[in-house]
Image 1: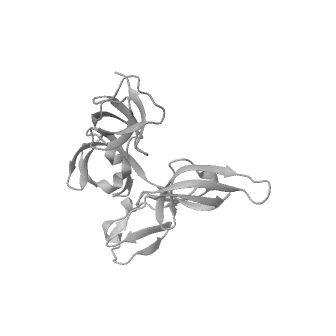
Image 2: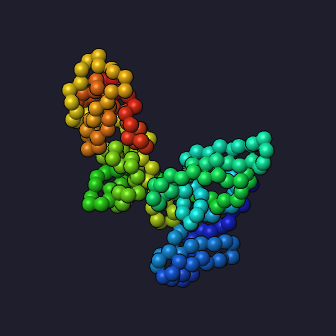
Image 3: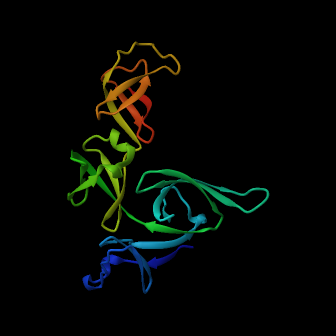
Length: 234
């Protein structure tokens, strides 16, 4: 069962906020929050859990970083103790790692706020996004979008993850439907197995596609890998 350590910084009076230059941990009556630089790294709720609470998309604090669980598998070998294989993705660097946890091992779960935004346009090294509920516009560093930014069209919806007021990650759509704007001429019926050619998409990204693909074809692309999935029939 999850045990909540209430750390709701939003309700602290302004006079109680602590500013300090070095990174330290401050214990308060019901738990712990972190300070980075001169601004509070706001953690709304820190939840103690264990591997039985794992689920895809869960965000945990691990090795001084925040990771999202991409996938996991509970394993009960014939000999030895049970364990959990997991694939984790860093929310700060995008790096994907594999890690094995002991069954029942304690972990710190970070409860973040997820909000829907609409991507409007690019401005320098940021993307301007609009809150779907309040219509407030914010600038989000391109690096927070990961590789999926290469396949993101204006007006597409994204999900932004907040740790307090700090943006820690942006989830782009897993699949994108994009038009081919440049490629070598395709030939009807040319479906040679495994044969590929480069094609430039409307977002500027280039992917490998089958030989029969032509300019103006609409393609379904996996934004996680940049791989062609299928041609969408009009």
